[in-house]
Structures are given as structure tokens and as C-alpha cells.
Length: 189
Length: 185
Image (cartoon, rainbow over all chains, first blue to last red; front, side, top):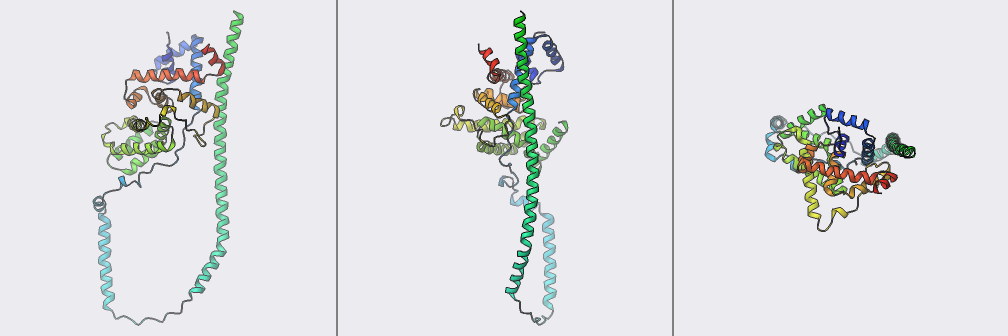
């Protein structure tokens, strides 16, 4: 079977049926020129894959988008249980208010003098005591998380780099070997 | 992969019935692919992000018109394609996209090794916009020829022709030096 360059590209792109794939593979086995072309296409594809997908600068948010917010009447219709609960709470509050209103109001109990300055001083002292420890804990936690993330990113980076280097080296070696074979062939002829 | 397709179909059906949560999940699954597709077309991150947002909004507004949920990806990319080209057409007179500098600044997508990625970027800019998009859809997004024809709204033969020519040009541009010299000789 004669395989055209376009059929070979279809093979590389995975667009052929199983039977067509087998035919191309048989032709590749038999034809060194076709194998060279196949290798060149693979090198091209490997190079194209070296451009990786970017992470998005920020996520697309739809929940907060006003376009997706329900209309007032949709909110009202979907709020049946909440409306019922609110009505019941209102009735209960009215009953309680009525009952309290009927009782004689007792004389107010004497209230101890409240020392605002002392209270604020105690709060400030408590905060001053607790703050350094809390900050230290937060910093330690942050450092641990950061180290873990950095380590993960570094190992991922190294792994991708190794894979890329291996792929490029394999492609390069293949081309070099091919050149050597071509050269030897030409010398032998 | 099949499991994922079934899940997508469920989400699409729910979203078609008005579930914003289901649509949000769909967005979170597809936003990175759509963003990267548009980014390679317009070559500007801010524009790509805005267009991506617009594409998902338009898709949501028209989701009920999608009859077959299995065709969601092609349909979504068709919308993204239209959004990108509308913007490019609007800007064309004052800002020719073919001569615009390639936006591959720091933090650009973890390109490794850098030299190869730069060579690929340079080679891609030498393709026509149609050829470039064919490569993006096939190589980076993995669409089948039929899906590409739907997204680009052109015949299958045109899609193939653009892709084959682009691959021949890229093959020459990205070949190792010795081979390139041989093929040029």
C-alpha cells in the first residue's frame, strides 16, 4: 500500500481506523523514507507539546454575576418556608410581648458601677499576652505550608523538565543516528 | 473519559433546567481549556480572560438551544471562536494581529525547555491565522476533524488542508538545523 504524506499525518493525529492504522504501520515497517517522514512529524509534535497550557490569572465567577441572580419575584416564590417561619416567629413575639406587658413592671435592681477603663485595660493586657504566641503559630504554620507547596512545585518542575529533556534527547539521538546511517549507506554505495 | 462525558451530560441537562450550580461546575471544568484556546488566538491574557467570560456567559444564555449534550465541547469552542474573531475583526484596522508581538512574558505557562517553546511560538506566528487555529484545535485541544469543521464552520476538506499545510511549515521551521539545511538545499 502506498501511504501518502497526508495519510501519515492522519496516522500521527490518530484519525485513522484500526485497519488503516495497520496498513500504515506495515508501510512504515517496509519503507525507510516513510519512517524518516514519520520521525520528523513526531519531532514537530514533541516540539509543539513543549508549549504548555497556562493557568488562568483568575477564575471565572458566575455565582456573583448579577445576570444570574434571581429576580425579586423568583426569590419571593422560592422563599415559602422562610416566609412561614417568619410569620410564626412574629406571632410568637406578639404573644410574649402581650404577656410581659400585662405584668407589673418590677423596680429596676441597683446596677453595680461599671469601670470602663479597667475593662479595656484587662482586654488590652489579654490581647498583648496572647498575640505573640498566636502570631508565632500562624507564621510557623505558613512556613510549613509554603515549604510543602514549594517542594511540590519544584519536584513537579523537575519531573516535567526531565521528561522534556528525555523526549528532546531521544528525538535528537534519532536524527543523529539517522544521519550516521545515511552517511554509512552513502559511503557503502 | 466516558465517565467524565456522562457527568458532563448530566451537568448540561441540569444547567438547561436552570441550575446555576451545575453550570458553575461545567465552567470550572472547561474554563482552562477555553482560556488557553482563546489566548493562543488573541495572544493577550486580559483579552483572553474577558473573551472567555463572554463566551461562557453566551453559552449559558443559549444553553437551551443545545439539543445534543454530547456536542457541548464543540459548541462551546464555536462560541469561543466567534467571540475571539469578533474582537479581532473590531481591532484589526488599528492593531493588526498578525504583526502583534507574541505575549510570552514571565510566568507564561511553564514553557520547557524555553528555547523550544520560543521556537514554537515563533513558528506559529509565521502561520496564517486559519492554519494556526487548525493546529491549536487539533494538537492542543485534541478535536477530531469533524468537530473542527463544526467549530470553524467550514468543510472538512478545508480543515484538513489547513492542518496539513501548517504541519509541513512547522516541520520545516522546527526541524533540527542539519535536517532543515538539507531540506532547504
